[in-house]
Image (tube, rainbow over all chains, first blue to last red; front, side, top):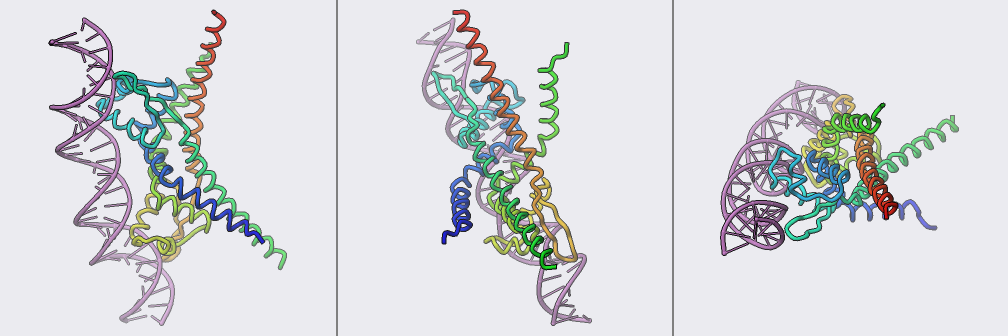
Length: 127
Length: 127
DNA sequence: AAAACATTCAACCAAATGGTTGACTTTAAA
DNA sequence: TTTAAAGTCAACCATTTGGTTGAATGTTTT
């Protein structure tokens, strides 16, 4: 007979392992206030130049440039270079990966609660 | 007349600012593979002792103890001390705060797209 | 051709992170 | 009443992070 629970377990772990690095990078990247602010601004305004983004912050252009590179490395942001200006654009696709991990975690939690109530029910039957 | 957009803007920023520290801490806390693994295990198994958690990892008890403290500080985990054993339990409430930020970000994105299509529509009218 | 602009690169620095080991406290067991 | 167990605390260490400044690269503008 097919062991669905085993298959489910193996599959969930395959997803977990393959996405693990992405999840770590995305979460770490978004854990910084400045980078979250940059993302927000890019969502509001659409594609922006690096200099324009930097003008909003009490921080050097270089610092913002580095923040953008961090966001870029984990693909929360894309870059289109036209001449000397770089157009930075938000890309929220990576967020889904994290959201899915949250969902998975919550379902693992629920699964345990279900098993727990099952046990409690069968115990009350035995009383 | 009431400026709903302004009120919405102010409110969203109040939420954003007050939750900012929590979001940063939760995201940074969860950006570590070991800590995510601990959270997953705690969701699967329910409350666990520190030593039992540590036994799964190729890492000192102290390291795990520190990881748990990080999770505890941002309230992803709670602790109940009975005698000499500490029972650690997952608490996923904080995840909602992050999920809400994701939702907010996406709605900001959508809002811009809507404005953009509005502009495009009015321009085609003018042709 | 020279000057200004947009941006990255490189080197540096202080602080934070993730790990280690060894000593310490408190509680439970022999 | 020793001894063992469960954890934390403290000090240390290498690496990463988030910022700085100054120079370098390539692209417009004048």
